[in-house]
Image (cartoon, rainbow, N blue to C red; front, side, top):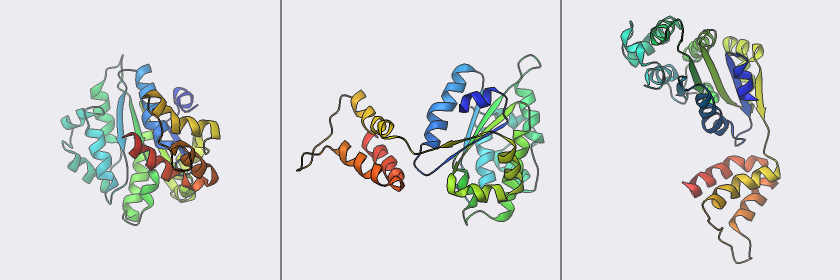
Amino acid sequence: RARERLEDGAGFLLIDGASGTGKSSLARAGLLPELQDLEPDLRLAVTMPNTAEPLAALARALFEPSAVPELVDGDFTTPEALSTYFIKGGLSAPFESALRRAGTDEAPARLLLLVDQLEALFSDAVSEVSRNAYAELIEALAALPNVQIVATLRANMREAALALPALGRLIDGHWGLSLTPPRPDALAEIVRGPAKAAALAFERNSEGLGLDEVLLHDSQSDPAALPLLQFTLDQLYA
């Protein structure tokens, strides 16, 4: 459904859900690779506002070789210079020019920007000025004809996002996708699938229970444990 909404021309798509429901995995491991398979020339940029200077992180992401490295030929030739421009209230003009240079009239360059874990924008480390400037820039980028933005957001931060005027307009004006906790059969596949693919078996404890059974029991009895399950599986299969 996320791919279909982007294929319909949406400039902005919000994927929200409780912690541990797979928002980032859907975007990073599912949506982005699938879209690039369909459109091999699609430019990709990935950023997370999990820093006191989220605009600097966004500027660095836009300069990446997979994104719009043609920015170096414009008025702001480094991520630091572009970040300073953004911080002072500058919007999408330098980026729009670089995107035009990157393509042709017959084959315009297109960019998909993933803003992962948007809730980090509301941490105490980010100033109100930076928060508002970031939101206004995202809104300006989403309005460009050759740019699409996917953002992931923890569901309990949705009200905070709506309270920012620019983000509120984006969320209210576009389709979104809300993820719910996985069903028991899907959760079992998440836990056991990688082990099965690698021909591995789960260790059993003194009561004869396999590690997979323990993980499934604990996560199904308490949905709030999903982030811990995600961390455990990352460590287990790393």
